[in-house]
Length: 389
Image (cartoon, rainbow, N blue to C red; front, side):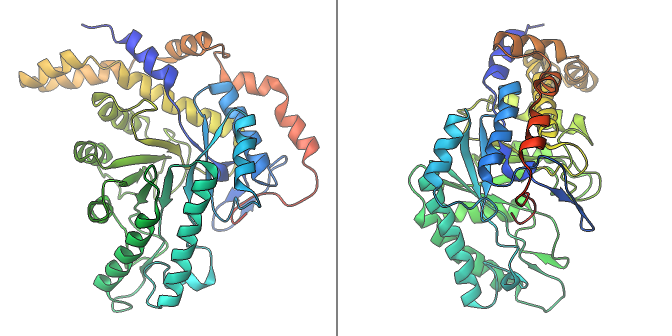
């Protein structure tokens, strides 16, 4: 049995999970957005909070922006501010779902004037990428229909393809489109990008710098997400992840909260292909809303959950697994995976953090820092960031 611990420690020391700027703002359900004390009032304060997650985990070096929620006068200045805080601007996320004009869709809307408005917003996001040094443009579209006959299903795919082609042409050589899919919601009859196959087909047509994003909360119950991961990896089209947990639909709960075994299975497929490191070309990101838990600890706990699933996946004995699979040893192969999953990796991760000069317990270290009390006292007045800001 091979000892995978040294290799696991090496990979874990270099792991980086991107944080979403919107996780630090107020959020809630369809019924209520809950306000918390000390919530950021602008993107600069969001970055300051994100920097705390990086400070105590060492595994959260970048922050995704959402436009227009994170719109500022000078994006280059925002990027410099991020660098001063020891983080960087990561993925730029577009927003074509919070405008009255988009009631019947954005890039798939039957009115070409509305499609032009949406396209111009996507092009603006590429401009922001240029200013911040970001390499990834993430596109999620709420477009779809509620009733049979409402619009042409094929026609909407044609419109989507046309807009994607225009945006793809605008990208720089080092920039990518990451196309996200979602089974349903807010439309309930058809969704224009409902699954990985639709996203994959559009990406194939666009070219090699268009890849698929997997949001772990965007699937039908029982979907084998690790199969999708393995397939897209094989095809070279897995661009990134939006990590979160769901019990029923797109719940946006903390990753690993609902089904930690699923997260382990996903990370196992990635570990098999050795694509967990920062040079893998895969953008690993959290996409969560902390409605009732405090924001910064929620992000710290989420990073730790991903680290724990990753550590377990890295400890799988690949030689023993391959031997059992080749021999048709069904129970033996499964046992190899379960042995790794049942390993308590918290001491291993504490050791990795200590070797990096970090506190072995990130949550306790943050709680003892006094930062939460500082921002509650300092951030009085102004408008707190939240959905739509």
